[in-house]
Length: 302
Image (cartoon, rainbow, N blue to C red):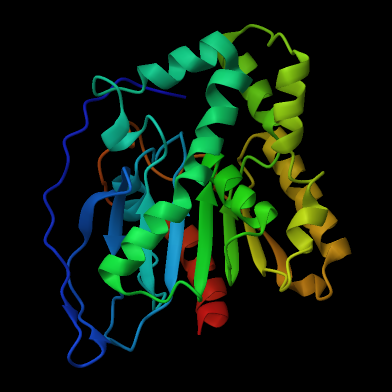
């Protein structure tokens, strides 16, 4: 699940915003931090009149496991929007001593209460301030926003949907962590040891069971169209959870077709090759995921 690799940040040019013409100028990616959160921002691939929509994405803990690597694996260049990739806690620029060992140590210490729950909670809690700072800097239209999450980043996107505090126009999940208990099962397999569940851990897992919380997601003033991309080669438990979430939401949505499951052949859990920290050429299977998501978002962010 994790490998020790040193992260060498890329130096990228700054995009320019032409405020005199009210247009976003096409430029190079931008990296930096916003409210303490590392980011990679890709401006719209074509010139857009007025403020463009925005897609905000959280990466996997598997490869690609940094904001820059996720942007390279899933650039979504065909979506006429800003694409903002936010770094997860203790990943990428926030790795400790240049490796993922700190996350692995947390998983060994307490997979639920030291790893899954706090990582997802921190990523969700730091999002509003980061979004506000990035909106001020780049001038995108956050009223037309989509959220995207891969694996554990999917649990962050689902948390945003379930809390219902930030307007979201569309959502995409890729091999998401729909139920924390399934993630813990994978950690148990990796560590070859059973997790000692406590009452506190059970309560935390309940909060990260988004099948059980599907009523909260569907209770938004405007139900968010959601695409769930699930690989045929993903972990069986995650595929089952994907099926269950889609079924639960479709039962609750006024327009069930606004919730779609795309089960992609040839897609395992990761979207990039190891080590998955630095940007790398897009794999053919990631291009298939990219195309599937682009088609979904183009229609919903227009």
